Image (cartoon, rainbow, N blue to C red):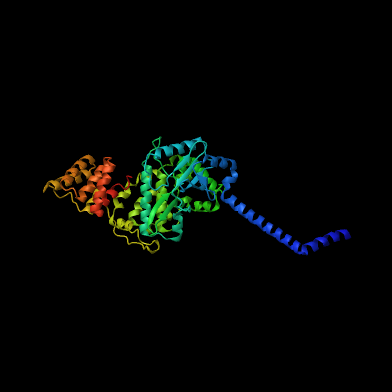
Length: 472
């Protein structure tokens, strides 16, 4: 017993010495560092669950990515692991690699076909794919979602939370989304089905404002992923998310759970998955529009405060939110009648106003336009009821207008060509000729005459852009 006390006493005296105190301090520091490391490791694992669950899979995936380098932090998202990457030219991208449990040969085949089909079409709005891989696994790299310094663009959810979007920006965003989806739906896959996005949510829509606080760019991410996985795999992911079993970063999970109601009903019903297609995008568009207009979360059709939605949007958005996919719009051309209404043109032109200072614009009486020619005639001051027999120019010009109205593009092109021979600098004739050339497939000549008209009278020239708004 005395020997034991002697040993304890010697240790006690040793720790009371200067050297002993330093040793004690070192142990405390090491313990704190170990705790901090454990916290960081735990948070990293929580953020990038997929890396630790499929470590060898993702190590092999990274070895295949020779065209760029991974930088920053990996995160587990709905479609897989998302990582910032940098290319040799110092541009940045976001790389998404779905895990092996949801990727099979069918998914790779759809992913491959999507990119082969879309490669020959101009698809505005959607983040470009500078690199993708579809052999052993699916690897998708999207560009322009990160700024020049590598920082991500701000997604729409941020602006909705801050309620910083006014009427002008609201309608500009929605019109751009409509144009992008119209272009996408115009592309048909090898089965004769329209391509679709399938996951249009506020967290997948990014907005880039320039230094003057005007919208510089609007981008939608994750193009091809929901389509490639197919309705069954997307439903599998949704079910796992709802059940708390999906390997996903917790903040992303929280946002997705709040926004799942904006996906179409058929995407969340196992008995209706065979009806999933392009109509799903119309439902998501309708839900997105109501959220932006009302500044309230979307639950279902009945929960929308329709009185706060502008009159001109209501009927179209209500049809978008039809529970039956067959009852939704077939395309976005229904918006064309009022897209160029003077009120909307005014709001679309208010791009130099500070985001924080935008006020709601008053709603005028609803304007109904029969067709695009009616818009053209109202803007350009023409009237095809008047007889054009006064002079050769008027006769040719009016004949061209009548041909435009009934879609006889070649006849219109010939009539406006004759008119321009008589008055080469007539802006209305130039823009009308540009429209006819565009419809005939001569895009270079159409753009040339549009630019000539714009130099003479921009207010007249805009008729050309309005005409092709949904035909990009």
